[in-house]
Image 1 (tube, helix red, strand yellow):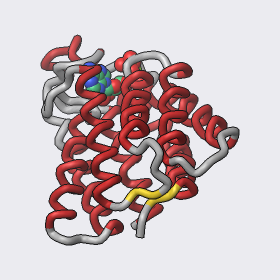
Image 2 (cartoon, rainbow, N blue to C red):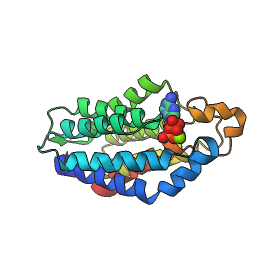
Image 3 (cartoon, rainbow, N blue to C red):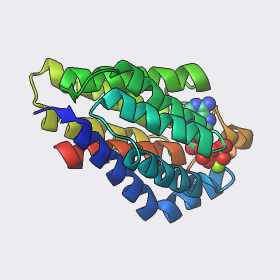
Image 4 (cartoon, rainbow, N blue to C red):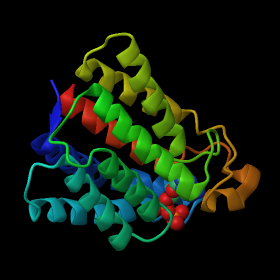
Length: 209
Ligand code: ADP
Ligand code: MG
């Protein structure tokens, strides 16, 4: 099995629906350690991304992902818009010209995306950011591929790893973004961006798994 353009469209639609469903929870998490806009930011951005995909033709997976990224960069303010925008732009660059992604192709794209997020935001593991969900997901994909897992199984493991990483942000002190202004008072709260990133990977596992 592989991931084609119609799969990517469906995945982005599923993520947009998951963000809408969890909007209030994402706002609540960001109210505790930020300014309370993460759920509304992401909901607005993903609705615009879905509209962009509906207006985009073609089977090039990379072009679709780049369209999502450009929409998020242009439509969403704050930290998460440019960071999620970079994630999708770099995934799209890695997948440029491809109409299908197998497990290795998907892992390459996600890894390029996460590297882009880190290059832009300078977050390292355990800084209490979306990187804490995304990096373990990439590692899990690589480990699953090395163990001979099929695509669906690998995606489920990567979503599980992202959720573990998301939960593991709770005891951390934030070192990047708005939450870092709170210093030790950021401890004891789950990071909103790690939470939305876990939703992104769960959407892939449920769609392709
Ligand atoms: P803002 O912080 O500008 O209000 P959002 O509330 O939409 O933006 O997004 C906050 C999330 O962005 C955080 O929970 C964190 O996961 C992520 N984030 C913030 N700064 C960084 C960074 N430098 N690198 C990676 N992720 C970051
Ligand atoms: Mg915020």
